[in-house]
Image 1: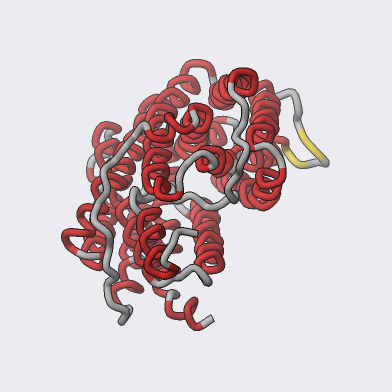
Image 2: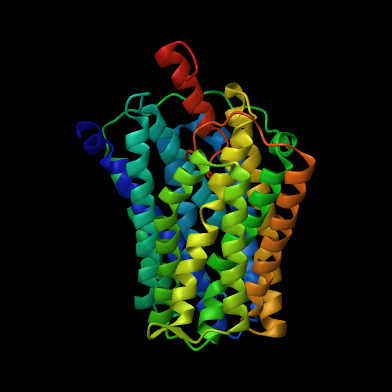
Length: 415
């Protein structure tokens, strides 16, 4: 308990970071519609965010090693606030794309600082508990960010000012904390294709997850708005998907540890295909009196959000313990591949064929993953040994390296 209290500044910063970045994406989508941006242009903004995010994942560790945690976090909070405040200055899609690159870069850098600082305070006895609390706090921030959308007016400078205030508030807890900056390992060579050598299926699965998550996060507000939902309805639509993913995490982990990773991946892919097909074809109007768009959102999050961890666990089954850093970095690379391309494609399809086209696109991606999974079943037997299903960071290229180093220092061997 004392440890959690001492880490309260970090956890509070996590909430502010999530509220800021989590609300910016949907607000940009709704603002773009209000300003007559095309769905394709809004999709480009989503892609631009993930270009910046990936750049931040790659570059921010070197910045932290050079300048320290507190200074880098201050820089990232400042860049994030600036990128938000500049939105009303020039309301053209090309300018907003540039701002989203800056926002994505700042978010990745902020999480690099927070997660590495958090890791420095942990040991093998408390790491699992504290990181579980961290993930819960992170999810609470994500949920709050979607709820905030209901109170913001699209394309209004006050809405962006409020988000910028939250970005600045993220700096306050860490700025006031009395704990010293932790030391960090030197940056490690980046091997982007490492996970593909371990498991091509895991690599493809993470690409599909990136395409799914980024399309829903950046373009789903267009779908919800053009489907007739109010601003409050859009917020509820996004929140239900996160709740579905949260509910699915525990059973997904238990099943992935008990049965074949591939089999569980097939199950979640089939669920994702079925849900996307039901939403895109609009064959179901309501369930128990509730519009299916809301039920479908919950089921969509339940089916798709756990797939990243399943793929990461599948890849780690054949990895050496010293390879976890390279695995984490490579997973980020493949996740970014799907994340960068998908929002632009989804936005184009919505503009060309209407709102349901986004879910048709996601469905086809999961169909491809399902087919490839069956092919791997036939051509390559599964690994005999399995490691534990566990959280794999998606925000820093060297958090896993920090974890590995501290395990060595704490116990003399890798566990």
